Length: 218
Length: 244
Length: 52
Image (cartoon, rainbow over all chains, first blue to last red):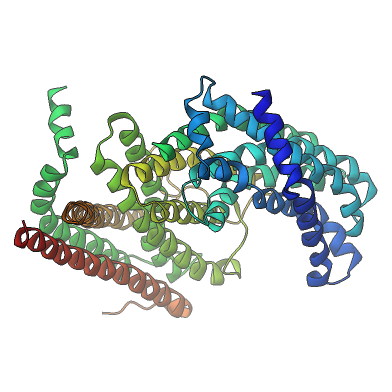
């Protein structure tokens, strides 16, 4: 289990696909927003939490198709599925590795990128907290989507079409947390709901994903 | 139990084909009678609403299709569960056949709602919880159909779409209540509930009920036709695979 | 025969018209592809019989 985890981390780091590409994509999404919206400070500050969340969500999607694809193509997924470790545990390990290489750096990058969008400083804490709490759900749900589409060649577009609808609750609660903090309302209810979705996804999604992996490999 | 077993035998494709063949025409006639009956009753023989004027006539299209749009999704969940538990091929194919019908019902409900919304609310679209819920429903239908189309092997596709349907339902329902976080919307509450106090007068309710039955029968008819089509497609694929 | 629809006549008729187009169009598309599938199955069965 630890070996798989370390191997996944190493692979992500070596290919540059982990930290580098995801963060660069996040930066680009945030960068094109003022170009498209215009440079109105008040509007940008208002939409900053939503844009940061949408940017994180899209960046997360970007790296999902690699989650099982390589192992599936070289046959090592079959070997892993027949190995005497629970498949749910395997998926959970891969989810964790994915989060460390995408969700965590995205969370850390949120404050500097938020500053580009004039995100008010009282929201810094909340954008970081909400992303920290919410991005594990993105990885867990994404692992399920990746497991569904692992057998599809060039399934990136399909994967996005399947996974984005599943991201809606996390996005709504995550962005609401920050917006409420900016409006001086209580940000805890949406934050708690984000955490609830994360815990439920972490508990349930590996099983759904392992079912999908088995269906795809027999 | 014996009755149940008698029902399960239609999960056998050949038996299903034989039975559905006999049902197609009577069902078509009954469907037309109910839809036309309900709509004509509603359009020509009901008064205008004192606030909404003649636009209340859109009710007979909007509410039945909206009810079916969500109802069809839950039928797909049920069919997916049956596929999981008993692995009846007809069940998985019926879920596949139902999805496009669900999309059309969703589109009709959204189109009539938008047209109705313009004079009543002053806008075609509002990000009201109920309207957003239909947008969510629509993207879930799209994803479900896209997954079916992407995977060639029928058993694998049945497995994967079933799990997507069930997992998706959980997320769709959470999203439906998550949007309540924004604010209370423009849309009125449920208008055709049986148990609670009805929000609509009887004079509007009964034609709408006939129309709802009609749209349900329309769904059944389309479902039979499309399921038969899917079974035939499988048969063609099997024949061609054997031939080569 | 036609009821007086008042100021919202265009709204009501548009709603009925759009619904009719969508539903009839879908019904026709379903019938058409069902027919094509039926014919294709017949052709496939004939093909299998002809070359045993």
